[in-house]
Image 1 (cartoon, rainbow, N blue to C red):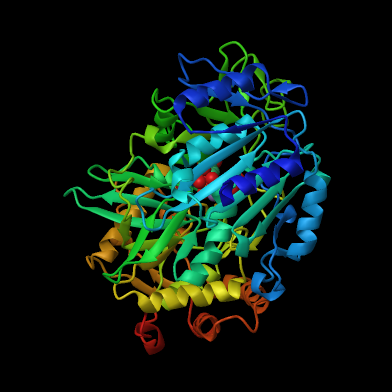
Image 2 (cartoon, rainbow, N blue to C red; image 1 turned 30 degrees about the vertical axis):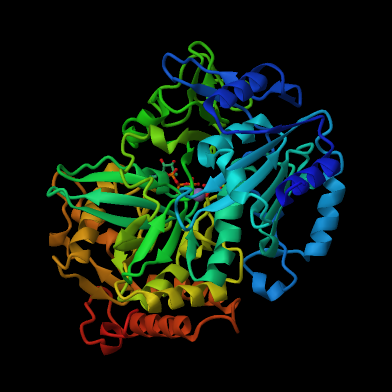
Amino acid sequence: MATALEKWVEEQARLCKPDRIHWCDGSEEEARRLIKIGVKEEKVNGQAIFHKLNHKSWPNGYYHRSHPTDVARTEHLTFVCHPDKDAVGPNNNWMHPDEAKEKMRKLSNGCMKGRTMYVLPYTMGHPDSPYAKSCIQITDISYVAVSMRIMTRMSRKSIEKIGGSEDFVKGLHSIGDLDPNKRFIMHFPDEHLVWSIGSGYGGNALLGKKCFSLRIASWLGYREGWLAEHMVILGIEDPKGKVTHITAAMPSACGKTNLAMLESALPGYKVWTLGDDIAWLNVGSDGRLWAINPETGLFGVAPGTSMKTNPNMLRTLKADKFYPTLFTNTALDADNNEPWWEGLDEEAPKNLMDWQGKPWQSGQDSKAAHPNARFTASIYNSPTLSKEFDNPKGVPISAIILGGRRTQLIPLVTEAFNWQNGVFLGARTGSETTAAAIHKEGVLRRDPMAMLPFCGYNMGDYFRHWLNIGKRLTNPPRIYSVNWFRADENGRFIWPGFGENIRVLKWILERVNNKVEARKTSIGLIPRLKDLDLSGLNIPARQLDKLFEVNPEEWQEELRDIEKFLSQFSGRLPKEILQEYQALKEQLNNNGSLEDIEDSLRFTDRGGA
Ligand code: GTP
Ligand code: SPV
Ligand code: MN
């Protein structure tokens, strides 16, 4: 008798009408076959899916160009479909599940004609982890099948684990005809189902990533008492060899991958990578917060990645281990058959084709690589991979960073007064938009915990959930905000960033270990300059001051914007968040610019977790 899984696949096949069905096993041999098909046979709009790159310089490298309208996440076409609109909240696009299904059935009818339906069995999380989830994704393009093999643990074992059960995560994906008017990414949280059509791009098409591991998993976490977060996980080794684990949330294209693979500018310190995008966080029986990375791959922003900024990433991309590594929408050096992007090296190669395949000259207005050009590489290729990566229990977390991209106002680093204040710090975080999603770039928007596009339910409830998690932590991580992107009058970044960010991590370690005091301000605890290791750096004092400035006048607009954002959640917004907001406003309005606030009893001990 057919299992629930087989029945579900058959049902989707009847709707999508593919020419063939192929159940994948996740083996390397299969990946080689799929790539061969993608190079030689399978086409989209008359274009081959993969192009083999120069394997002498980029071992196992393959190049992919996507449809020019299909280069980033499309937040306006992404919906959460739950009968209760309020449960979904103002932070999501909403559609009734019946209406969404009706729409998707029409669009999907016959969408795989002439194509192969790939059935991908995979697990998010280590299969031995109590937090792992067994999943199935259907897709009709080899690019997605191969990408999913890099990004997840894909294996027939997942099918065995599901067995006859109906309890598995379902993803139905088709590139459709790539018409942006027929592109939708629909989430059905109660059914553990994601249904996506019309896009082959990462977050729209690799359904185990943002769609399941954040939007649906955040909903599961809310129900079950854990957190699914847009966070990197890393271990920081100090000169004595002690490793401390932290997580960091930053919005898309704001530095997570770079932080996760950081090559330390300070001797004796080393960063170990556990994840670069998603963390699932559970409260341990020891009262600490524990993190696992459900993924196994790195889907990273190419522009700006170089031996200077992120040498460990380049080593990963050039490693001759896990097969294959994909490059999407970068430029192509036609003479050497190599990928290229802005920032890879100083000079562009002579005979360069841009990301759409057109000849490109230095000095041209447009970029050669798409600003959201990406690579897809196995985390097992990373020279900084933590030995804890495959530990099913995960790692205990000592600090959480909640960052953003702010050219103004926000200091380099701030420590929250306690868990509740930290949740507010996350809730009020803003960030300037990037090319990772299709919208105007550089516009400031609130992006709480970097989850605005990924929280699958009402953010008012999400803040409450964070507060509740805090109550269960007897030994909670400290919470920090960071901002690598503060700019000077000429628009140049003041802080050198990348490997130099270790200086901020070092301060955080010293705070966590109660080695240094901090300066109390209205917005949080800020380093005393003498405690920040700036050895060998050459930042003028005036600029340095800017990095730690708290100017109440400049904060007025920020306060208004925070209030406007939070007021959307009225009714669902926890009173604690409102109290924190009120306290911040009062503090900023009652105190002079750079003065320490030592007299604030309300701030010193409000109970924390
Ligand atoms: P997603 O994969 O979209 O979630 O992005 P991410 O948060 O992993 O961002 P990533 O590390 O890929 O960095 C995005 C862009 O920011 C790249 O162009 C980087 O070069 C740049 N960047 C990263 N870290 C720093 C930094 O410390 N300083 C500066 N100035 N730029 C940085
Ligand atoms: C992001 O946009 O945050 C990414 C890339 O990490 S995507 O997989 O498209 O979401
Ligand atoms: Mn991301």
